[in-house]
Image (tube, rainbow, N blue to C red):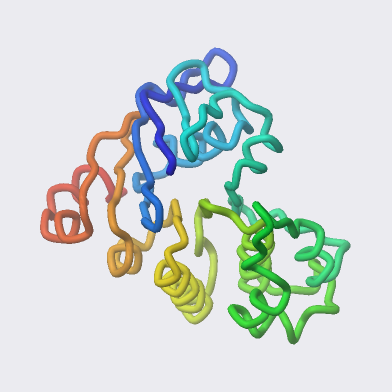
Length: 232
């Protein structure tokens, strides 16, 4: 579904990505792992067109999307939960969700009722403004907003960063449910143990290069990987 080959990207004269390759198959959950500053978020921004790649290729659902405008890439069927959530602060929960709603090929799997079923707390808070939500509720809203685009691929950048343990658990439960429904997911997070419990494959990034790809079993049974690439 998503194929990234030898992706390169820069901020001005400073090159950040040198050689990123990864793929996400239909119904698969793949993670991007690595220490801070290694290029994970830049990879997501380059895939989404928020940063124009300087080299390499991005294909989604069989079509080249490298360098397209972000809105055009989103329309192909990619829903993004960005780092920092970036919900609309002066809109209500329900207005945030309705603002991004769209259907593809006549199908609308994700509706308000479906999102409220996934996150009952959002239904309770549906009339509250974005600024009146806790951090965890804002993250739920960001996920729900992305789902309202009815994406073929859901991308989450720092899925549970800064959230309380109980809220993190709710987000993991949500992602496991989505996996059970064959939702394709690409996710960045630091909680390796939680990710390994449901992800199909992991891609480790080191200094702007993808240096390892493997399964959860391979990741968790090889301490050298975590010591070399993931520990601060």
